[in-house]
Image (cartoon, rainbow, N blue to C red; front, side, top):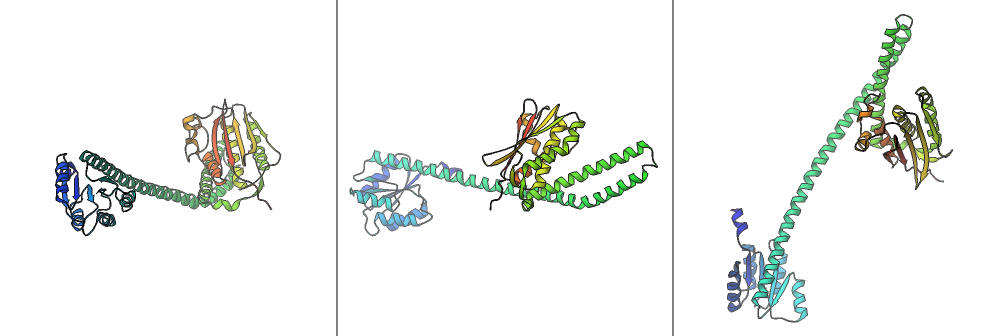
Length: 386
């Protein structure tokens, strides 16, 4: 039934109190494949429009009782007929009369005596515009529904992600304490057994202790990321010297670099003040250095600088680098690229650094070093004044 209605020709309601005009217009429109309904005065026009739902109304202006202006005004006040385009048929030729028609909601007018070809052209034009507006309205409604559906799906996904994240954070929090206690007891046991067991057994026990340290490190990283996500770490911001923080990180990793036969160097200003979370920033720089030392062939260089209101920490190595396709992925939690499969770690190092960048309203970017990789941590961390 719906398809049959959609295939019907457009319906035009013709309103005129003059029978000869009415008959002429009706015959002409029907002869051009349009359906026609008629009304002979304003009151009948309002009832008919509300009943038949026309696609367009041809409305005479000068009628006894309700004139065309009042009829049009009432049509536009009725939600069921408001959207129907109205074309006035009028013998009034003054500009103010034509303007008055537009003010009450008409879309066009034709002057009497009627020129039928002009009338047909205007009718077809506004019928086409009406169809286009209806189509756009339907498409807009579908688009809005799709947007609402996607927003609902996105909200559900975010809720699920937050639920999983909160669960992992709760697990990390609940397990970290007993694991730490277990580590202390195991360390004490190893000290007691050093003189009582053979070297191979002692080595296996110390390996187990290292595994426990690795798990505790994962839990610590997860909890720090949870604090960053929740914005809790903003309370740890203090005026600090970033040059001093970077120098301490380089000094801490210097023995590891020497052990691996790598040169670890630092350049930049002797002092670089900024408002930061010094503990998180120290860990972020340490993570970048530690990551670079895993892949460097001969050297790792740390550079500090400031420009355009940002402080930048760049850590460069001369290792194999990271493929363009992986540059975005390597900062995701638990992601480990092909080059890192044989190295220690669980894929939280760069994720934590990115979290630190976000906390400091900054960015983390990876660029080619030709050869190797340079990771740039940019921070918006101007010091307090006054």
